Length: 376
Image 1 (tube, rainbow, N blue to C red):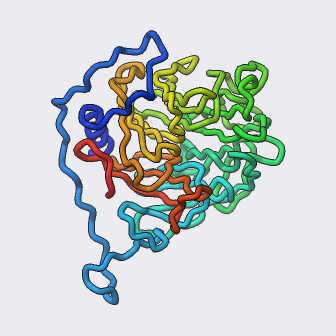
Image 2: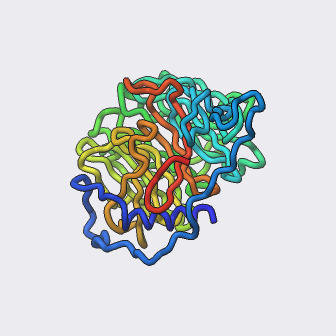
Image 3: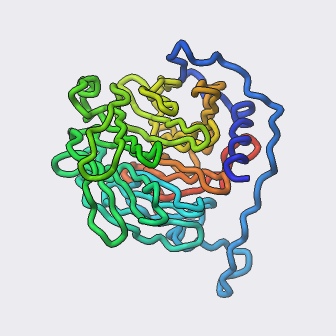
C-alpha cells in the first residue's frame, strides 16, 4: 500500500483541508488553471493502528514508556530525540529506517523506531552561517558500497564528498563559493549517473545570476568519479537552498529555495534542461527539504512550523492550493522523506531557537489520514 496510500490521502487533503490562503500564486503562464481536486478518490483504508511496544514488567500497567532512541520523549510519533541541529534526512533501503544529518557536528546518524540511535559516519564541517552538513544522498549502489554523498561547508568552500562507515570522506566536487550566509545546499540523484546539486547564493543574489559563479545554481554532475567533467548548469537565480527530491514514479526532480521576496517550488522534468517555477509563497513560510511520490510533494516549513502538501498533474502543474498539515505539532521542520508505510518522516530544526523542547532536535513520524496530518 505504502506511498499509494499516502498519495490518495494527500489528494483528499487538497479537497478537504483548510486552504493556505493569500500566500501562493502561479508564476508560469503554462501552469494549469486551478481545478478542484477529484473528491471521488477514496482512501484505501482507515487509520492504521500502531503495534504496541512491549511493556516493561517493572513499569505500572498502562503507563506510557519512551521508545529506545527517543531520549525519554513520550510524545507520540517521536522516533529519535536529543539530536543536534539537523541538516537533512534520507530513508534507507526498505523504507523502515533513515539516516539523519547533524548540520553543526557533521555526524550522520541511523535512526529507526524502537532502536537506539547510532552513528553511521562523520565528516568534518565548518558550520558558518547556515552551512555545515546540509545535504545527504545515498549512493545509487548503496546496498553494495554503503556510500553516502554529502554537501558540506569547509573553511574554504562548499563541496560534495562521499563517505563510508569508518572511512575518511573523499572529494567529489569542490570550489562551490562560500559566504557569510547562503551556504546551505542539497543533493539528490536524478539517475545512477546524474547527481543534482543545489547551491546557495552565499547571501548575494547577484552571484546567483552570474553565469560565471556556481553560487545560487542547480547543477547536474554526470559522473561522481575522479576527473569527471564540470557540471552542467541547469538553472540559475536560486536563493537560499531548500531541498531536492525525486519523484520515483515520474522521474521529475522537485526543487525548493528561498528567493529574496518569496519561497519557491520548481520542477525539472526528466531530460529537462531547466527548472520551471510552479508555485510561490509570498509570505515566505521557510521552505526546506521535500519528499515526493506519485506527483505529490511534501515540503518542510520551518517558519510556518508545518508541512505543505502540494498535489500536481502532468508536467508539475499544481492542482489547487497547497495544504498545511501537522502544524505546531513538533515545532519547525527542516527535512522530510516518505517511509515504506506511506508515513512521512521529518527532522526538526528547533535546537537553536527559543522554543526548543528538552528532547530536540527530533526525527518524527507523521501519518496522513482522512485529510489531516496527525500524530502516529
